[in-house]
Image (cartoon, rainbow, N blue to C red; front, side, top):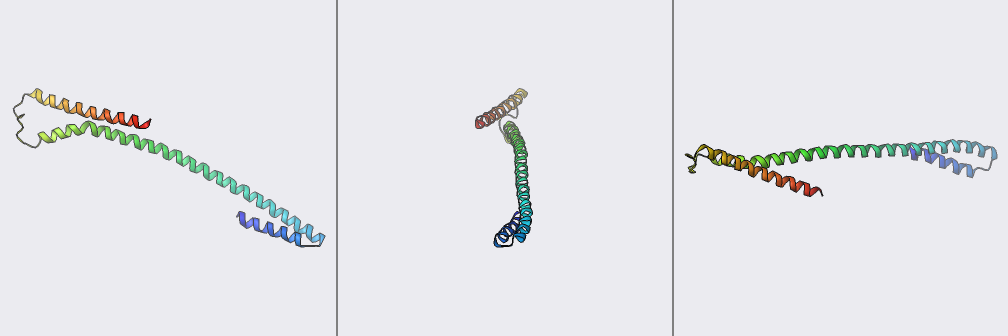
Length: 138
């Protein structure tokens, strides 16, 4: 639109300069002034549209950053949960294989000791993950 309005304004200015008749020159000058006003208005409209688009892009970038942070937090929670429960599932799958391990006739407290050890190992791995994440932010 800006180019379409700017071209007639420039053409009218050149036509005014080419005409020798004073009456025709003033008539053309009037049209050239109106065309110049329209061209300036169109330039302002273009600048406003560009500013609005830049504002919209910045706002969308902020929204995307918020969603990205939420996704990162959810991923970290999932990693911590996996770190806690991975040792438990590894020990459980080992005991669930029906192999002779020597613990078949062990007292019941041995089960709780192995369970507590597995859970402790999971907590230690999750603490390492948390420490790595905190160190990675700095």
